[in-house]
Image 1 (cartoon, each protein chain N blue to C red):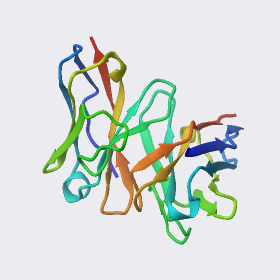
Image 2 (cartoon, rainbow over the protein chains, first blue to last red; image 1 turned 45 degrees about the vertical axis):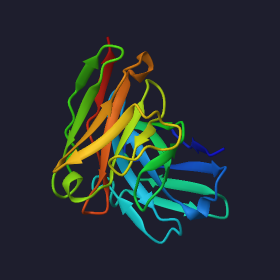
Image 3 (cartoon, rainbow over the protein chains, first blue to last red; image 1 turned 135 degrees about the vertical axis):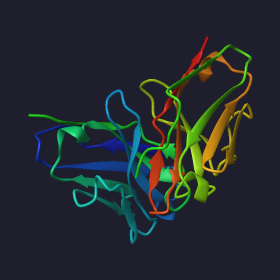
Image 4 (cartoon, rainbow over the protein chains, first blue to last red; image 1 turned 180 degrees about the vertical axis):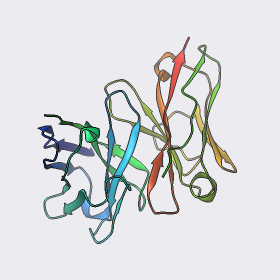
Length: 119
Length: 110
């Protein structure tokens, strides 16, 4: 059974940093692109980033470029999202997902981890 | 990248059919057959319902179908059931090698 389990969310001050993790199991992690999607409270889904199966290629939404870094450790079956220079508008539930193709679709999702940026 | 345009809400009675539209541009919806649809119940993670415009993942009911014409994709749900009440989001691959979502549509089953 495919499982994705996010962790690392919490309360952080504006300008601070946070690293999210997504532990994967139930499939061959190194064969799939993986990504992050976020959802602000009461709002819609927003694509954040995707990383290729090998980790060599990364793609970001314009509003996250330069502040967020996606990475993966295929030996640990874990996906990461390093978030720097956090702003109030980054407050959201962050979901990790497995991508069937290069960028999408996300056929499996984690349960999400809440990031709150506030002083 | 601007969000794809979806109606804020649609409604239908049990047994009826409804269609949700998703309008983009030639740089996303119109340029690629990589449109997906997701269902999200309150407090839950999204669930993939349709991918590559019209393909259903294993386990998804054949009451759900997708299509595309020009820059507009559509999700049709036939034989509406109470459990279909949820938010629905479309997404599309873009020419910038990114993904863009629609604003979401709240489906109410009357």
